[in-house]
Image 1 (tube, rainbow, N blue to C red):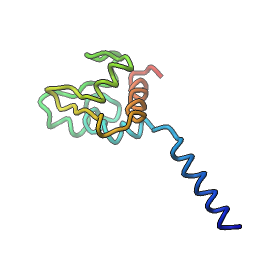
Image 2: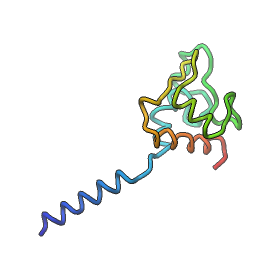
Image 3: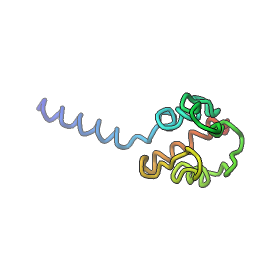
Length: 110
């Protein structure tokens, strides 16, 4: 009986972990803050090695637009001619969507 209870608990824990949406802030910290900085101001520690400062993601508008579609495109494909790599092959769709939503927080929209 105890073994069955443990198996059920493990199955429920695994299902809950799989169902949890990605954490946009955690993804930002891992993948973006190195260049864009902890508050999205383009002042991350890796930015010092670039010829131009990374974009401020805390700005109210972006050069290529702030619509979900425009931001998702940048995250997915990157920006040619800049150090901004695309993450289409590195992050899943729901993770990139979570980043789009977290960037709204940095812009003060949420």
